Amino acid sequence: MLRRVGSAGRLAVFNTLILAMILGTVVAVFIGNFTTSYQAVAASSIGIELHEFQQQALKQKPSNLEVFSRNFLVNYALAPGEVVVIAYTHGGVLSTPGSASVLRSPQVRQWLVTPPARTVVASTQIAGSPVEVVAAPIFAGHNVVGTFIATSDLSQFAAERAREIRLSISVGVIALVAAVMSTFVLLRRLLRKVGRITTTAQNIESGNLDERLGDQGSNDEVGELAHTFDSMLDRLQTVMNAQRRLLSDVSHQLRTPLTAARGHLEVLGRGPMDDPAEVRETLDIVIDQIDHTRSVVERLLMLGRVMEPDFLDVRPTELRTLLREVHGAVEVLARRDFREPVSPDVVIEVDVEKLRGALMNLVDNAIRATHDGDTVALVAELDDEHGEQMMRISVDDSGPGIEPNQRAAVLERFARPGARDRDGSGLGLAIVKAVAEAHGGWIEITTSPYGGARVTMVVPLGTHDDESEVQ
Image 1 (tube, rainbow, N blue to C red):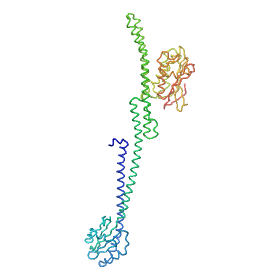
Image 2 (cartoon, helix red, strand yellow):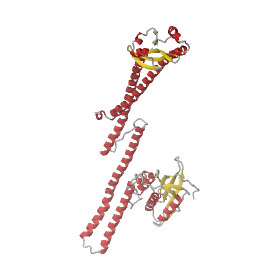
Image 3 (cartoon, rainbow, N blue to C red):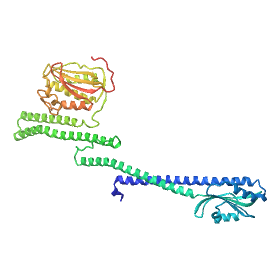
Image 4 (cartoon, rainbow, N blue to C red):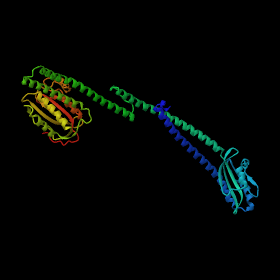
């Protein structure tokens, strides 16, 4: 049956049971303490009477005890509802007004006949009313000669006790209902948000990655969960889109070289293949197409891994040493005027292999855009204009440059604007952009001091800033 109520209902029922047990325990303890306290007050009141009687009786002669007792009952001021009975074994029974019902009590009559050996305090019923009773022996020397009995009517206490019970139960029920209702409302609100998360997750499972929870209007744990969930969906959608784009790019870019290679092999297969030069030329073309295909696939796979958490292996790196290594690797690739790298003596926190590959791509693009004798230069400089220290690493060339209206396009995949990247895959600058963004930076394209293009990677400096003068 509880399954039909829902999670909020089940939790509310469970909470109700717990609260009811707690409130019941509190009410029971309160009533118990109230009863004990009232009975103690009543016993104390009649105990005072007993004490005063015993203190004065010890001073009396045995023959004078009855007279003393009569005078005590006449002169002692009793509290409302109290009755005192004094009985002697060889004499009469003395009592205060209103003692008729007390004298009819079997327990009292038993004490009148046989005095108790010691003081007895008891709660009993007399004539249908609750009564607190104190009974004690009366001594004459070492002999028991009678019984002193004092009673206090607890009817008023019973009425007050019943009223307190009703009040406690009423307050407890109101508190219980309020607590249960507020708990149910809060649980419904909480579980409604959780239900939206579940529905969104189910929609995502069916392939709809556009679902979002949005602002939940609260800064509690559920709101934080919704925000984290949406952030996870954003990242998941980015990765899925990157994978779809990768598959689309692979199918698009591999179709042409594979078709060309197949065509050359089919032409070669239809001939007698008795001309070694023709066979060698065809094989060279096919191998060139395969190498180009492999290069495209490797670069696309690298772009596809940009969103992975372990894409970067960040370590402290001496920038000046890195630029000199790149300069040494590229100066033998073409007949260009490769200028000595200019860099501050700093240590930056980067993935050195990814950054080296990105710089090699930039230099390769500069070589493709220039001719023999043209200038290519590596320049690095610090920049703190963005609120934190950033390192600007630029590759300058003296080629035709990049028109301002083409600078955004060249950063896209397979872009080959103008004369740049005539023979490349069109992925070089896209990879550079991906590496920069993975480091928390960006790419800027401007005009170089040599009249060509300046492509700049802007990346955070990191925590190591042993800066010296630029050389």
